[in-house]
Image (cartoon, rainbow, N blue to C red; front, side, top):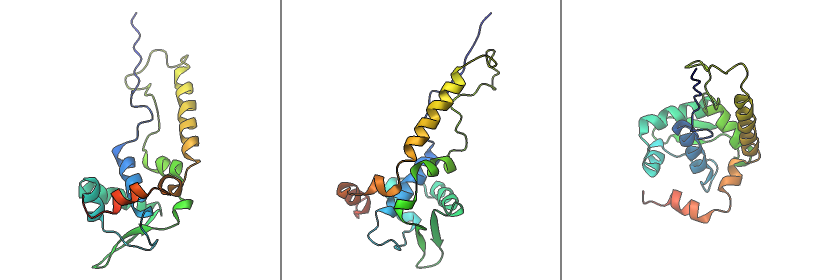
Amino acid sequence: MSIKIYIRYTFMQLTKYTDYALRVLMYLAMQDEPDTKVQIKTISEKFGIPKNHLMKVVHQLGKENMIKTVRGKHGGIMLCQPPSDIIVGHVIRKFEMTLSPVNCEKPLCQIQEICLLKPALFKAMEAFLSTLDQYTLADITKNQPCLKDCLLSQKS
């Protein structure tokens, strides 16, 4: 009898969708004035992210009340709240569609009923998120003159 265990080895690796959301938030947090409106095109060019992908991310950031979007000629996006109020773990929970570290259902794992791997991995995932809950957007962007220079320089 052969038993196969299928584990996604990208455990705790964020999706591009979440990565892009964090990049947008970091870029906005680095602005000198909190009410500075930034065009999506600017962020797209700075990070080399396709604009259409970024539009989807920005839409969800708006739905989650993390950013405010302003339409029109002088429009753009900006943070809805101070960077110190945006918790990194919260952002990840909102953007990661599935936080399941292992898929025991497809294909059906033969030892699913007795296996202790899944609970151990879920405990590790909770520790991962709990650690990120200790950091705010301000924590990961403050006192970073090199990051600010890199993000806000005119060169892409």
